[in-house]
Length: 405
View 1 (cartoon, helix red, strand yellow):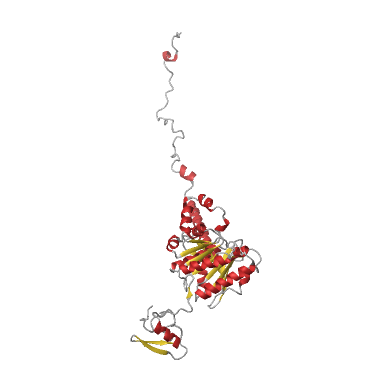
View 2 (view 1 turned 180 degrees about the horizontal axis):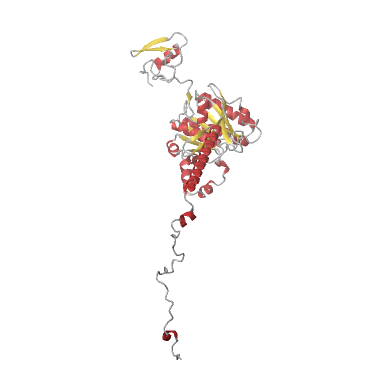
């Protein structure tokens, strides 16, 4: 990204043939302002860019498009072909059960994967639970907590009167997570003091030099609204949007749960926020089944395709999009194939049984007596000699001890 990059090199934009300023990489609608620096010729769109090129050590070697970035979350990428601008305050509004915390966790994880810092403002969970939430999705944030890239601003623990007792009740694993998270946590003494929250948030961002890089996550504006008066909550949102999003060019994603009046804070902030992501449950696609869907309703400054995307979350992968109708057709086809295979198997078994000889026939075959054979196989065959009918001797005819006359 140094100044020695030659004009006309790849600049990260599909339309590389168009003339672009060699400093800001924006298109040049008028005649270029030419300048030679260190033997290299440059063309700039304006005298301001020319002077900046001479005075600066670096020039932009890619088209930034007002610093857009790909979120890395499936539903958001599908709806934002140009990415989202870095100076946006985005409200993520969802019904209970849509796994909005998993959505926020994935936004954080994709930012950390890009090597950018994240400050997580939590009103709903203690720091240890925040870490556990990432680990459940198989996203190991422990190294990022350790090297300072991931920082937590704790607006929850003030609710615990005896924190030592809470720590003593933990098992060894939770104690380990709590100790790692504690080193990367700023605890807010009184979250209803929004001035303290803003100061600690600003200090955390200053320590990580978060200007035109990184992300801020606020897990629940709904919970914030229960701590302060509505006018204070509105002013807090407007102030952090002005200071962080517009002043630092760092985007903010803030969660909100639709649990009551849809026109109450923070859902009536649509006119204030730059972007609105809607999460819902619907049973219109599959009978008796609630499916999760996401849609980007608006996002200022970029092209938005406001379509509903059906999704689910899997550990290690994150948000996975799918088409319910396609999945149902695929399932029906699998069931038909299984039924067809079962029918063929039954037909084959029936044919096999039909080909086998009858058991009774097999048992008697070859055992019928030959013609003339004696039915009683144990009796002796009759002799061909005539029978001796002569009377027996007298002595033999009289029993023993009987006298003869």
